[in-house]
Length: 354
Ligand code: TLP
Image (cartoon, rainbow, N blue to C red):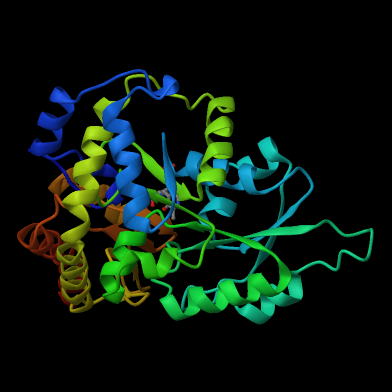
């Protein structure tokens, strides 16, 4: 039996339609600019995000890194959230490989970076001791705090602030189509205010590999050189791009199902004694925790669920979990998960009553 894997939407595997498209993809050497399927994917991603051009890259991490290295020179400063994926989970690549100096500020409970905090962090370049603030890196939706979408209004006010100081904006939009779906807006409303955006094909959109980096023609021309420098120039990559095209055309329009299933999961878990929902559920992530009445911690429950029910969850703290819904998690699967967790928690409470 396949496991029920809620650790992330990155675990989603390609659809049958993607596999057929991959098998039949027309290909060429993409480093020579000869791969028709990749060219089509890049055109599509640019069009969907309202940018002039785009670049197919191996991963979200690579897309963010290429964007930062393209926008910044060594020694430049990038303002980002203390809970941003680029700061926490990308191996310090911007600093290690680009010499880019991160300046982190708090992420607010609603996922935004406070504009006053940004203003206060921007360096005064008339003082020669200071590095030059070059870039604001913003995550939308903000993953670590519940995958919360940041509104078009917020994005526009961030743009206005950056224009005042001549700063660039890169958006880590790994799940930006989830954000747009949750907000009920066109994704372009979120991407128009930024200079560059990275989004992932391989998370809720189900493609096996790959992310898109989108921006102006000039930005993408320079980004392409950096991708090559990082060893990311791929050859007959149309095989992967074929899945990416379906990801954009078909999978971006069904994400509300994943969001409804995440709410269903949260509602189910909320009714179980000993479980708390930690953060509002706005897209496809549920953050929950075990209270002190339960005699097991997150590792204890995770191990039981894996062994007895083949259910996988992601641990994010001693008593804290993240569960992520995606295409392969249906409403019925959610109910199975809720029942399994209820069984484990009730067994404890009933055992106590005896
Ligand atoms: N996130 C993964 C883990 O790395 C935590 C996950 O399971 O959520 N930006 C954001 C906001 C992300 O959540 C991720 C992946 C990335 C960038 C990096 O994408 P990949 O994994 O393709 O390098």
